Amino acid sequence: MPVIDHRRRRLGTAAGTVLLTLTVAGCSGLGRTAVGPVTYTTERNAVIMVNSPSVKGCHRLAPAGAKEVTNGTLIDIILYRTRDCTGPGTTYVATTVSDVSGARNLPWRSFSTVH
Image 1 (tube, rainbow, N blue to C red):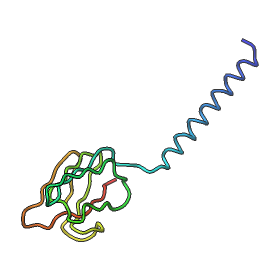
Image 2 (image 1 turned 30 degrees about the vertical axis):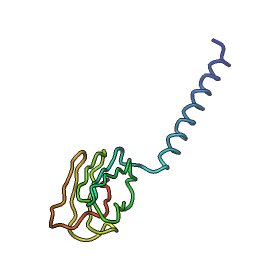
Image 3 (image 1 turned 135 degrees about the vertical axis):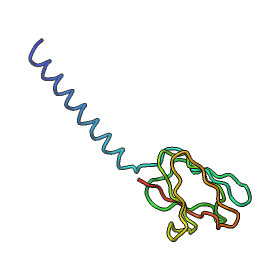
Image 4 (image 1 turned 180 degrees about the vertical axis):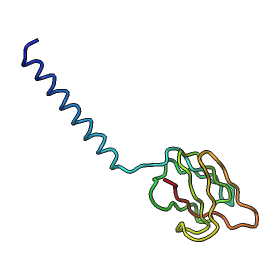
């Protein structure tokens, strides 16, 4: 094999490695999501699905809140009784687990992810 072909092959491999690295780095900046759905039922029995929510920030539920929440994501979530993911009365819901609010309890109004 001529020396020139060997150098081209090395240069092509190096260029491919650089492009792959840049592609992966660019995609990681898009923001991570909790792969899968968070499904909840409102007081009026409407079923709402939030598919692959961001792992960052607070996620508000329907204005009336939720009486039942199923975490179908790959990341655990925390449910809150307030609209801004603060305050007491939180509930930890592990991956692929459901939780139901008691009849006397306030509905859940927001959630955040555990990451």
